[in-house]
Image (cartoon, rainbow, N blue to C red; front, side, top):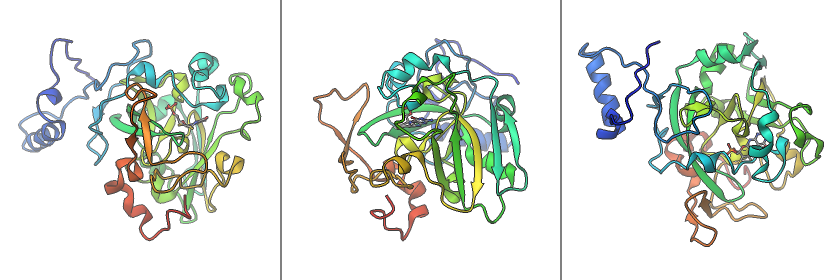
Length: 322
Ligand code: MTE
C-alpha cells in the first residue's frame, strides 16, 4: 500500500482545516469522483519516541474518537504506567518491561462463537483499517492522560468470530509468563489479569483493539503487542497484552473484583458522583500538565463520552452497578 508521508515542513491538511470538516469534504469529493480515495496518512497528532516501528493510520471518523484535549507527551505516557505484571510502582513497567517478547504473539478467540480461531499478530494487524483515536484515559487512582492510540474497533474482530446468542459477555485474559514478567512473583493479584465487558459494550465503536500509540507500535509498558482501550471506563478495564478473548454466557469475574470487590465493580464507568472507598472520583490530575500542587480538574461522567455511551446504561442504577 502506498503511504504518502508529508515532509516535516509541510502542514497536514488536517492542520489547516478542522479535521471533521476536512474529512467530510474529502468524503463528498470522493463520492463525486473528484478525488481518489485517500491513501492512509501517518498519524501525527503527537510525536512518538522514534524507536519503535511506525504504524500508519487515518484519523478516526467514529463519533467522539478525537478528543480536543492536548495529547500527553510520549515520555510521560510511557514512563508513568500501571502494569502490575512488571511491578506496582509507576516507573516499574518502563524499567522492567523490556523482558516482554511481543513477537511471536497469538490471540485465541474462543467460547460461545461459530468461528473460534487463533490469530497471530500479523493477521490481526491486517484485519481492520488502522485509525488514530485520541482518547482521554482516566485511572481510578485520580490521574488522567490523553493518548493518540492506533487500532480499530474491537467489534471488527468480534463480528468475524460470529458470537452465538448465548454470548452475553466478553472475557479478556492477558499474558502471565513468569519468564517474561517479574511482577508475577508478587501475589498482588491472582494472575493472569482478567477483565470483561458486556457484549454491547464490547461492540460499541469506541471500544478499541489497540496496537499502537503516537503513530508507532505499542511500547511494552503500554501493553504490547495488543490491548483494549475503553475510554469511558476507569483505566484498569483496558487490559494490556491480551492472549485470549472468550465469549461467555455469565458475567466474568475480573481480577480487580476478585482482589477487592467492594472497591472495583464490573462496570467501572468513570463517574464523579460515585467515590471509590479510598479515592474521591470528583476530580483528576492530568499527567505532565497539572503539577502536584495545581488545582485538580473536574472529572466528567463517562469521562466525557456520555453522548456516545450513555444509552448503554439507560435505566441502570450506576451507584449499585459501579
Ligand atoms: N493490564 C494488565 N495486563 N495489567 C495491569 O496491571 N493495569 C491497568 C490497565 N491494564 C493493567 C492492565 C490500569 S490500572 C491502568 S490505569 C491502565 O492499564 C494503564 O494503561 P497505561 O499504562 O498505558 O496508561
